[in-house]
Image (tube, rainbow, N blue to C red; front, top):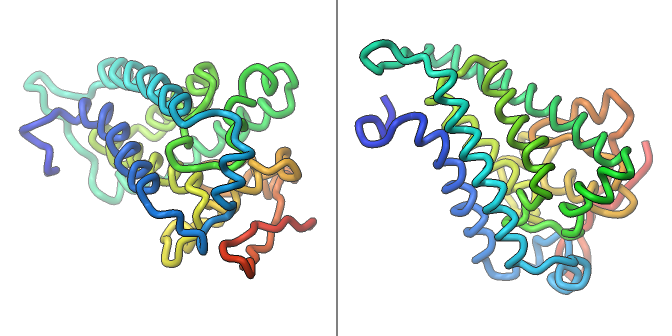
Length: 257
């Protein structure tokens, strides 16, 4: 049993909960004070290097979420496992955990190869993927700031494949997609906060993805949002030192293998 049972359908939660979680978590980061001692880039760098205003970022994210919500609703309708009485039998907790792990690997695999190809193909990078890299200094609300076509190919289709291959129900999908959203937002937060569990349990984290957004790391660290396996296997892993700066904050300083 889940807290929304009897109030909202699993399909509605699977569609709209990740959107709500995105704005709640990204909004939390947005409302924090400058926190100069924990930033990977100064606020001045953010203002000078990023070539797109916050208002345009918000509009871009909302457009992508509109597409995602439409696809999610269609996907849930077409794959419904409900019986004649409208009840969906849920898998056991261990099976749901396994489905989430499978979905994580499927999403990582899809996003790595699509993301890498968008960098290698000059036309796709110039006209599509470069929109995301207008945020040279990432911040939380911009986590899903993409060209609409990239949003469809990279995130929406990647999520759909993860859902289909894992065989999860809409109820399990609520947990998986909310978790994926939180992880993605955190990776773009630009903050190296003490006690952040994502920094403790994932090598693919805020600093790892920050390397990819910098000029020297643009052709490295494609993996997202969970693991760094594909980067390590296929030679696109760029290691770094996390250096505490005397003036405050941190720098993900690149090093060669």
